[in-house]
Length: 114
Length: 110
Image (cartoon, rainbow over all chains, first blue to last red; front, top):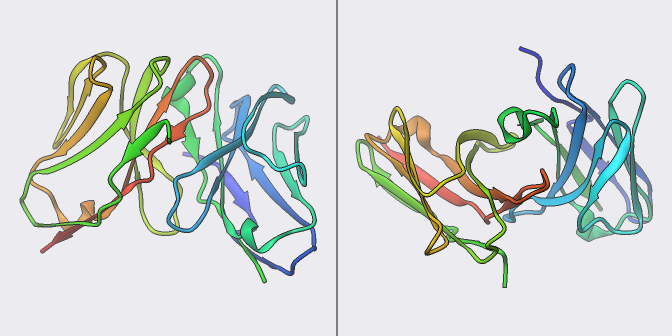
């Protein structure tokens, strides 16, 4: 079965650079969530989109922005990168009517800021 | 104080042992309670979920929720080396965003 696809798998950036992470949800999933998991930390919710509109916002820095496109894929744009942004970034997708039953995570993008 | 507290471990047990993993929470609005398993460098994988107090069993896994005490548990029977992973509890309220515990690293020794 198709899963949530994230790209790239690994990314190394320098401080103050910009990074773009991509997420391709499971076909027919209408909701995308972004989470940030620092080293040894629990995943922290960043932002979510339902039908291309922002549906919920968590602890996402102002330097980050995200959007969901017409094909339902989502991109997380991160600017003025800081060392503390080094983390595993997960995307999850679901259908709103199935809620937690269909909530599936991708394998994540590991971002390293040097 | 975090909304969800979980002992990070690590927890090391011999193969065949019964494992008990626990989380406490403070937000009474949480309606769904989940356990995720996360292997190294992989995304969290949903193991079990429940939305009411009581027990739910699935094979070797039993999830237990006590809403009055704001306490949830995951029991793994006959633990296997392949169960070695980080186990995260997660909870959600009215929205679909998940609030995770810090995860417990479990090692099952053959």
